[in-house]
Length: 86
Image (tube, rainbow, N blue to C red):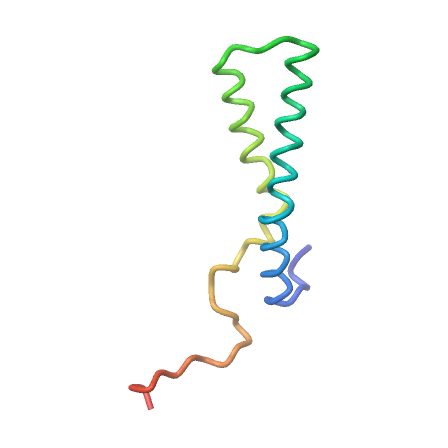
């Protein structure tokens, strides 16, 4: 899905996702767990911890393709030539 985007566009999307999307997702998850506590009651602490762990991992799977290769240098960029390599 994200393979057709350029390297620069993918980097900007990752930054946008981490800076804007992640806080919104955290607020959504905490709100949903709060609603669950309101209507069902508070679950045991280990169940609540497991729920937060699952919610903390689940968001990554739809964006796995977006994060793939972001930590590597741009494949289309000019190679960096240092002064001592000339």
